[in-house]
Image 1: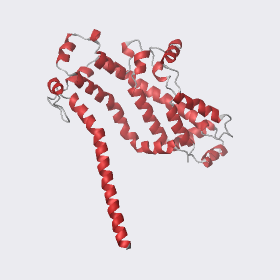
Image 2: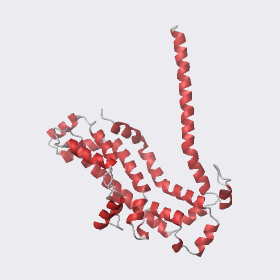
Image 3: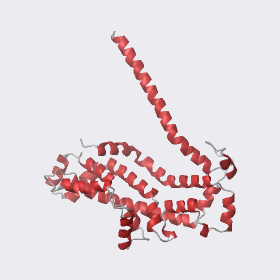
Image 4: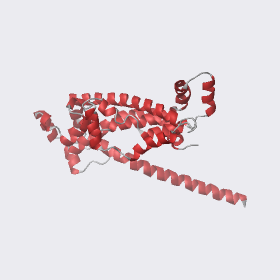
Length: 298
């Protein structure tokens, strides 16, 4: 009787594992195949793209779309602006997140009005000041047309703050008490106890911040007046959607006659994805742990 039960359980386990594998393969294909298609379109010529012959492999292989985008001096200037924004913005985000999450992770008995402060920040996830008030504020502060207009409005991302706050609450109190006994203050305890333990959460939040800064385009469009101060995503949008007619020369128009609009859009997507895809493998091992532990209070 027990042997038959074991055989039945073994068969059920095998069916379950096979079903999981099949489902995961289907989900992976749903995620990967559109990306492969975009890559194929970006390397295909206008005739095959317009005729709809391109599926998962380039037809009429060409790199003209990439040459058109990468040959522009404005492209590299926009890339530089985005790189500066990425580094500066992420650094500001992490500093403010950790300095805010540390006190909010304490009990109400140790931080008076802790609940009020927590709700003060949380409400901003639900209610926004609106586009016009934000624009007026940035304009009155004299931040328009500067890198600070891109990094300061979102300097403290609340979702990441919640993750870090909950992660800090997992740190054993004994470690903090030992640091205080050794004469450490709060800043030293944060730097030498909390931050080293919180590497998975910091890596996860860093990835969120970097993706947000790199992919942002709307704030560059409304806050920047000068074309040479546009971040990369805003610049690429203007190249592909608005086509920057006033800046095009005769060579550009001749080249665009041989290029498909879809190829240019696909090349834009690939170029914009490369920097983040290059960083993600180094942070991947921390990502799941940082999300799981930072999402709930144990």
